[in-house]
Length: 375
Image (cartoon, rainbow, N blue to C red; front, side, top):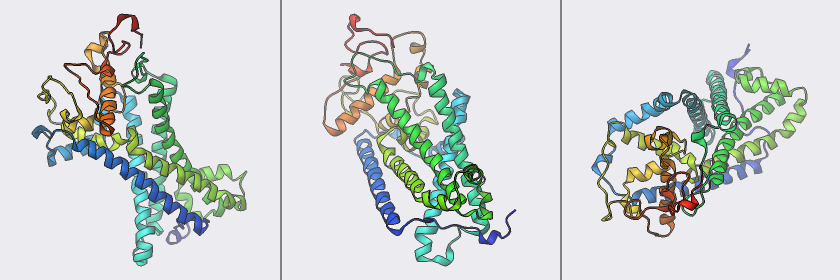
């Protein structure tokens, strides 16, 4: 029972020295700089692709893509287990992102400019705290499902085939490491938020913080080991770890598979009305893709939207029948070559001069039978 809801609220940088707040803003600027630099590099690559009328983004396509992504319908249709996990992560991450923006507006914009307009207090703060905890739990629940799926179940479609020649394809071990880095960064950021909240509550025990039900429960579990004084003393350390983890994830997004959060929206818009039911005319004289500029803008974005989930291989009739073909390896090879040409202009081809990394799963790209290896 909250005696005085009007008193609800909290300082954003509770018990932190001023110099640490300054360092945080400097590191935030650095993380955002790394993020925008990575995004700029991605957009430069997209700008080198061919523009086609079939890929024109219309309002209808944009709205349909937003609805599709918010509902996660495609994932629910194909795999209910993955659909549930992705829905929880999507809504949990999205809710926490909005919560972060609310704090930014209230503390960094309104407080120094128009303090009388600040709104993160009273009844609004109570609802905000309750919703933020709910979104945080949803994020962690979805990540737990994903981790269980990869660690305990590890279905075949999530396993990367080992091959002799990896000159044009990331090694399976590197791909597995990137998958876990992405997952663990999100887990650390989500758990860290609850730990920071719980330690702050344990230091002061304000009655209105019961609205932060998850943080309040965790603070109760920690109360036996933490008195108010000790909680206040360790708060800056827990806050620093959480802040560094969150900023590292922000900087990491455009340089990893996490970029699919941006790329998937555009590709979903293009795929919604049958725009991809017919193959586009090849741009090169050889009848295939010989250089980066032969791919369309949408195709380049689609390469970045791939999360290596293996759905393409699970649905491919040729791969399912045992034919030595790996659609996922083809995508990974194309993406590796696009990234290489974005730095220096090598020549590659998918038709009329096969790209080595587009070789079938479990087969050597040279095609030599003595080099075949089971995936």
